[in-house]
Image 1 (cartoon, rainbow, N blue to C red):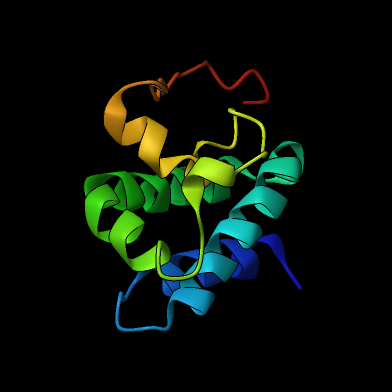
Image 2: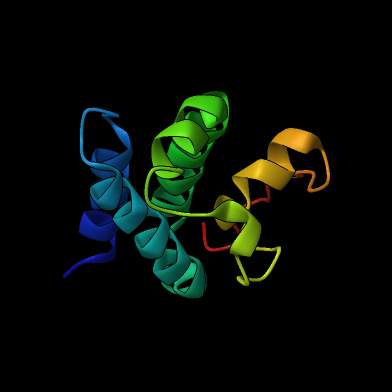
Length: 109
């Protein structure tokens, strides 16, 4: 499966809270897999991934409530860097999401 397809699948799983919470939980698992593959992604794939992450963050309360039907965030033992497993701590401010879009000159031209 191509990396673009995996990123798009992540976005599709986040697209509707009408899905079962188990399907939404699959989105978090897929996101962890994508995190491990960041170095193999194109810039376009990374930007699309971050766009979906922003959607999750913009709707964090709804996602947390939806996922709590099947997942206890307080029991998460995933690393803090995988903030999507710690939506409760992101909401409380215990975990702060930082990021920046950077630019560089294309030296290949």
